[in-house]
Image 1 (cartoon, helix red, strand yellow):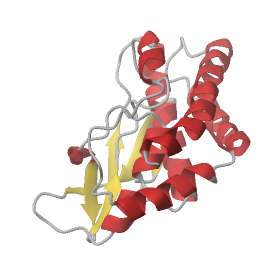
Image 2 (cartoon, rainbow, N blue to C red):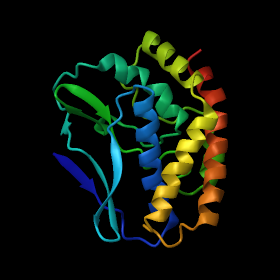
Image 3 (tube, one colour):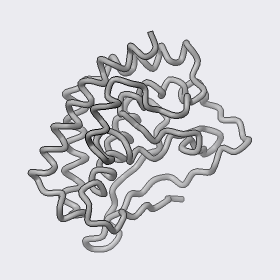
Image 4 (cartoon, helix red, strand yellow):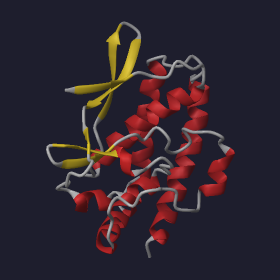
Length: 198
């Protein structure tokens, strides 16, 4: 069963950025073998788009079977500058935990000047049950990310949101501006994040 998340009805470019961030984080995380919930942009009616993802359940007191993989994901979440990672954003399906809600990653939140203040610091609020060993493995995953390929994926995610016309303010020019900012964030975080755990 799928969970459908419709875009906010605000005339704000950040609505489009949040959706692009969700798509990008899901695509890249899954490609890296990390437990990120798969998210797709779907057209439900002519001209009406929403995010579609697996319906998950709260972890609550349940034990997830992939704690190791979740712990390995923490450096990736830091790489994305995901300021909204918290325990409630780990949900489960068939005993496995999945990280959800990447709408506040990269430059998809405001005020944008705040990015400069936190760019060189850890930002996540939950440690994903990480251990020293899983953090080392996660750092190696981040080090292995091909930034040029990641930026291509980010461009594809942003372009699909722009073409869906979710927000009229998210023009090609605005997309390129935010792609440039987020690309700089990714390049910086790839070098910075390993220092958090060494």
